[in-house]
Length: 253
Length: 253
Image 1 (cartoon, chains in turn purple, cyan):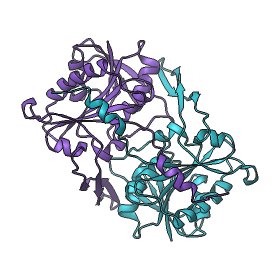
Image 2: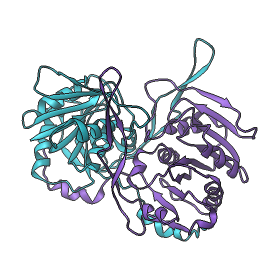
Image 3: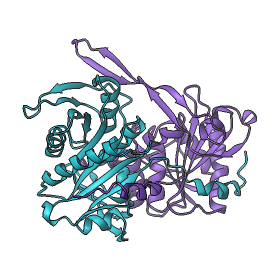
Image 4: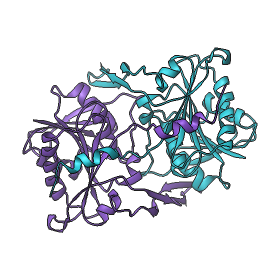
């Protein structure tokens, strides 16, 4: 069995190494990941400049690993199209440092890499550790192995993937696993304005959450209640039930 | 009436200026756009460094315009949260140089900016001119004005936006307007491998289309047949009808 792993925190991040060491128990591991922190790059791809890929040795393990100058999505494309000589059975993205819940998945490099995996026809999952600091990846890595086995036993339909968020606590404290929907999370007043040493203004994107959906069944609710959330994701952005309505607008040339 | 305009080709691109000049007929125009080409940035946001915004004068028009060092999504966020002192009635993104059709919308900075507009609660549209060269923005700009009026008359439901692609030809050659779905477009072997002057390999993302959906009703079909496509877009990535199935996988701790 072969698994391709990527992330958006960069190839030397703790989360990707813990994930690789765990999945190694059942598969040959290929890592193709950004050479640096590339969080919040969404589904960006690098079109206007070349991409570099260098083989790297990680932890003296038997991983085949490449450090890539592009985005997480570039890593999946380049891994599949160029670097790997074999087709992987699964693609995993993570383990991300921080949650990827609700509306935030749109901005997430981690989730976008798994979406790219699904676009290219591979069963894919994104795994995130839902906390801000003192992250302990051990159980999330162990759970990723459980999930990889389940993904091999069962079959994800085409053009779908799994978005997984694991609470940052010991296994004993986790209350279960729940199949969820993406909740809604809204931000406001999210820029800090400061003046630089030359008297010029600059802005820094913060992120004060002002509205969060606490509906049972949402990933946000679930992780808040110390359960692992698994949300099935698709990427067809067509709003089908609005087509009729729009036709009645009678837009013409 | 007030319209906020952004794009991903940069604030000095022809498409955004033509759009602004056209929409100016019915609204005060605010432009908040990237300081340079930012195509294919998807829904990326700038979190790890500050963002700069400078007021610029465009074409001696009465636009309020800011050139921003961030991505298209940053531009919408910063425009709404910081730069504009008034709330716009509409947000337009474009006119993009090149199509944003089918699966490609996931990578598109133009469409992502309009998605961000919808996330923030504004009726939003992305407009693209579907060709590679010799672009003539005039009719796309004229049609954007028609669309803006329709968007004011009618009401888009929350969390939806419009993705518009206009064929690159004279008005007389356009065969109509169609409300469409996003088609499927797949790429393969899309990296060119070259050797640099120092003997090192680099990769450049190309994009040979190998599979394209020609179903009547898709945006791809429509634009190929010289019609304007308008696709209603949402951004809830939950694959609802897979939840039951996944529950039957019995994934546990």
